[in-house]
Amino acid sequence: MKKILLIFTLFISTIALAQQEVKLNIANALVFKTIDISYEYYLSGDTSIGISGLYNFEQKSKDFRYYEESMVTPYLRHYFTADRVWNLFGEGFFGIATGYKKIEIVEPNIYEKYSDSALGISFGAKYISESGFLVDAYVGIARNLFSANSPILVPRVGINVGWKF
Figure (cartoon, one colour):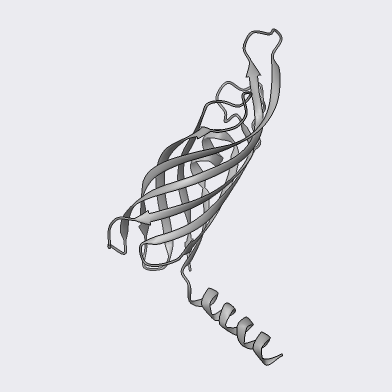
């Protein structure tokens, strides 16, 4: 019992001392009518892992929308500069998505459902204030790997606002 209590205490103290972020992609919420929330955990001063969850509320019939209805995106980031306020980063990510792709030939519009996974990279910049408020912006691209029904390319674009604690 003492070993379990010791392991639990070490685990909680490691999480409590670690730097973490919770973010909302405000650009997706305003432009694309989607909710995209991210959590990021720092492994070291220049490396972090994270996960994003996206859900699309826009109607399938809209011309300007993501194909993805929902997407979970784990990622690994490496920060290139040592500045605590402004920092540049590169990111590798793996997106798992479901969505609808419009069939172009048929009238009226018919949509095919798909599920696929995409592998990609993105680059961006992050600003963190002394109080923990943060803004980051990034742009990237991925390629779907498995389904013939899915779009070939998947964009990863965002402006996040959040909190580092």
